[in-house]
Length: 173
Image 1 (cartoon, rainbow, N blue to C red):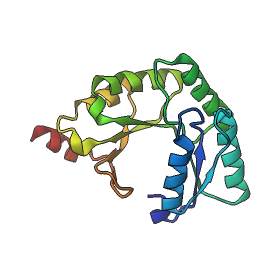
Image 2: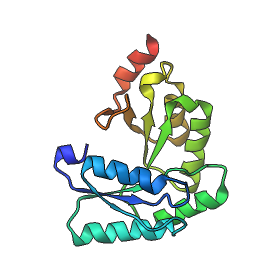
Image 3: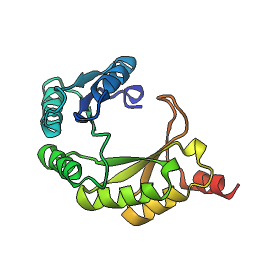
Image 4: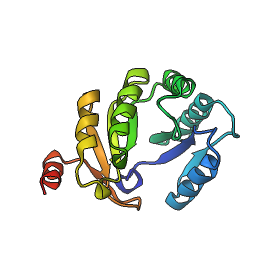
Protein backbone atom coordinates (compact mmCIF):
# COMPACT_ATOMS: atom_id res chain seq x y z
CA UNK A 1 0.00 0.00 0.00
CA UNK A 2 2.78 2.44 0.87
CA UNK A 3 4.82 1.62 -2.22
CA UNK A 4 1.74 1.96 -4.41
CA UNK A 5 1.25 5.45 -2.99
CA UNK A 6 4.85 6.55 -3.61
CA UNK A 7 6.37 5.97 -0.17
CA UNK A 8 9.59 4.12 0.48
CA UNK A 9 9.43 1.51 3.22
CA UNK A 10 11.68 -0.61 5.40
CA UNK A 11 10.54 -3.50 7.60
CA UNK A 12 11.90 -4.13 11.08
CA UNK A 13 11.77 -7.68 12.38
CA UNK A 14 11.25 -7.03 16.08
CA UNK A 15 9.64 -10.44 16.56
CA UNK A 16 12.92 -12.03 17.59
CA UNK A 17 11.62 -14.96 19.63
CA UNK A 18 9.04 -16.79 17.51
CA UNK A 19 10.59 -19.55 15.45
CA UNK A 20 10.55 -18.68 11.76
CA UNK A 21 9.52 -15.06 12.26
CA UNK A 22 12.65 -13.61 10.69
CA UNK A 23 12.45 -15.87 7.64
CA UNK A 24 8.73 -15.20 7.27
CA UNK A 25 9.16 -11.42 7.27
CA UNK A 26 12.21 -11.76 5.01
CA UNK A 27 10.05 -13.57 2.46
CA UNK A 28 7.44 -10.79 2.60
CA UNK A 29 10.15 -8.14 2.21
CA UNK A 30 11.52 -9.92 -0.84
CA UNK A 31 8.08 -10.30 -2.44
CA UNK A 32 7.34 -6.63 -1.81
CA UNK A 33 10.77 -5.43 -2.93
CA UNK A 34 11.59 -3.65 0.33
CA UNK A 35 14.54 -3.87 2.70
CA UNK A 36 14.27 -5.59 6.04
CA UNK A 37 16.34 -4.86 9.14
CA UNK A 38 16.91 -7.86 11.39
CA UNK A 39 19.12 -9.10 14.18
CA UNK A 40 19.52 -12.68 15.35
CA UNK A 41 16.92 -14.66 17.27
CA UNK A 42 16.81 -13.62 20.91
CA UNK A 43 17.98 -10.08 20.15
CA UNK A 44 16.41 -7.08 21.83
CA UNK A 45 13.31 -6.15 19.77
CA UNK A 46 13.75 -2.47 20.68
CA UNK A 47 17.30 -2.53 19.29
CA UNK A 48 16.04 -3.93 15.99
CA UNK A 49 13.38 -1.22 15.77
CA UNK A 50 15.92 1.48 16.68
CA UNK A 51 18.35 0.27 14.00
CA UNK A 52 15.56 0.23 11.40
CA UNK A 53 14.69 3.83 12.19
CA UNK A 54 18.33 4.88 11.97
CA UNK A 55 18.59 3.07 8.62
CA UNK A 56 15.48 4.86 7.37
CA UNK A 57 16.83 8.24 8.45
CA UNK A 58 20.20 7.60 6.81
CA UNK A 59 18.59 6.47 3.54
CA UNK A 60 15.69 8.93 3.50
CA UNK A 61 13.09 6.16 3.73
CA UNK A 62 9.57 7.41 4.44
CA UNK A 63 8.03 4.57 6.46
CA UNK A 64 9.34 2.06 8.98
CA UNK A 65 7.00 -0.84 9.72
CA UNK A 66 7.99 -2.56 12.95
CA UNK A 67 6.70 -6.12 13.12
CA UNK A 68 6.23 -7.31 16.69
CA UNK A 69 3.89 -10.21 15.88
CA UNK A 70 3.71 -13.10 18.25
CA UNK A 71 2.89 -11.10 21.35
CA UNK A 72 0.37 -12.66 23.70
CA UNK A 73 -1.52 -10.18 25.84
CA UNK A 74 -1.45 -12.51 28.86
CA UNK A 75 2.36 -12.70 28.83
CA UNK A 76 3.37 -9.68 30.90
CA UNK A 77 7.08 -9.94 30.01
CA UNK A 78 6.35 -9.81 26.27
CA UNK A 79 3.90 -6.96 26.76
CA UNK A 80 6.44 -4.99 28.82
CA UNK A 81 9.00 -5.63 26.10
CA UNK A 82 6.56 -4.21 23.54
CA UNK A 83 6.05 -1.16 25.73
CA UNK A 84 9.86 -0.79 25.77
CA UNK A 85 9.95 -0.83 21.95
CA UNK A 86 7.44 1.99 21.96
CA UNK A 87 9.40 4.00 24.57
CA UNK A 88 12.67 3.58 22.66
CA UNK A 89 11.49 4.42 19.14
CA UNK A 90 8.56 6.75 19.90
CA UNK A 91 6.55 5.72 16.80
CA UNK A 92 4.27 8.14 15.01
CA UNK A 93 1.53 5.53 14.93
CA UNK A 94 0.93 2.31 16.85
CA UNK A 95 -1.51 -0.09 15.25
CA UNK A 96 -2.78 -3.35 16.63
CA UNK A 97 -3.55 -6.05 14.06
CA UNK A 98 -6.29 -8.38 15.26
CA UNK A 99 -7.88 -11.42 13.68
CA UNK A 100 -11.65 -10.93 13.29
CA UNK A 101 -12.17 -14.67 13.72
CA UNK A 102 -10.88 -14.69 17.30
CA UNK A 103 -14.08 -13.06 18.58
CA UNK A 104 -13.97 -12.10 22.25
CA UNK A 105 -10.25 -12.84 22.44
CA UNK A 106 -9.68 -9.98 19.97
CA UNK A 107 -11.55 -7.69 22.33
CA UNK A 108 -9.50 -8.76 25.35
CA UNK A 109 -6.30 -8.50 23.31
CA UNK A 110 -7.13 -4.99 22.13
CA UNK A 111 -8.08 -3.80 25.59
CA UNK A 112 -4.88 -5.19 27.14
CA UNK A 113 -2.63 -3.83 24.36
CA UNK A 114 -4.19 -0.40 24.65
CA UNK A 115 -3.76 -0.32 28.43
CA UNK A 116 -0.15 -1.52 28.47
CA UNK A 117 1.26 -0.17 25.20
CA UNK A 118 -1.24 2.40 23.98
CA UNK A 119 -2.58 2.02 20.46
CA UNK A 120 -3.74 4.62 17.98
CA UNK A 121 -5.95 2.32 15.93
CA UNK A 122 -6.64 -1.18 14.71
CA UNK A 123 -6.31 -3.23 11.58
CA UNK A 124 -8.87 -6.01 11.53
CA UNK A 125 -7.90 -9.03 9.42
CA UNK A 126 -9.96 -11.89 7.98
CA UNK A 127 -13.06 -9.71 7.78
CA UNK A 128 -14.01 -11.55 4.61
CA UNK A 129 -14.43 -14.72 6.69
CA UNK A 130 -16.35 -13.11 9.61
CA UNK A 131 -19.86 -12.20 8.55
CA UNK A 132 -20.94 -11.00 11.97
CA UNK A 133 -18.25 -8.41 12.62
CA UNK A 134 -19.06 -8.16 16.29
CA UNK A 135 -15.43 -8.21 17.36
CA UNK A 136 -14.76 -5.14 15.22
CA UNK A 137 -17.42 -3.13 16.97
CA UNK A 138 -16.30 -4.37 20.37
CA UNK A 139 -12.60 -3.66 19.69
CA UNK A 140 -13.42 -0.10 18.67
CA UNK A 141 -15.65 0.31 21.71
CA UNK A 142 -13.22 -0.97 24.38
CA UNK A 143 -10.23 0.94 23.00
CA UNK A 144 -12.13 4.04 21.90
CA UNK A 145 -9.77 3.97 18.91
CA UNK A 146 -10.69 3.73 15.23
CA UNK A 147 -10.46 0.71 12.99
CA UNK A 148 -8.33 2.08 10.17
CA UNK A 149 -8.09 -0.86 7.78
CA UNK A 150 -9.65 -4.25 7.21
CA UNK A 151 -8.15 -7.31 5.59
CA UNK A 152 -10.52 -8.85 3.07
CA UNK A 153 -8.38 -11.58 1.54
CA UNK A 154 -5.01 -13.26 1.44
CA UNK A 155 -3.00 -10.99 -0.87
CA UNK A 156 -1.11 -7.76 -0.20
CA UNK A 157 -3.70 -5.73 -2.09
CA UNK A 158 -6.52 -7.04 0.12
CA UNK A 159 -6.11 -4.32 2.73
CA UNK A 160 -8.84 -1.70 2.51
CA UNK A 161 -9.64 1.46 4.42
CA UNK A 162 -12.33 0.78 7.00
CA UNK A 163 -15.68 2.11 5.81
CA UNK A 164 -18.19 2.12 8.72
CA UNK A 165 -21.23 2.39 6.47
CA UNK A 166 -20.13 -0.47 4.22
CA UNK A 167 -19.21 -2.53 7.28
CA UNK A 168 -22.62 -1.93 8.84
CA UNK A 169 -24.29 -3.08 5.63
CA UNK A 170 -22.18 -6.24 5.70
CA UNK A 171 -23.27 -7.00 9.27
CA UNK A 172 -26.94 -6.37 8.49
CA UNK A 173 -27.04 -8.94 5.64
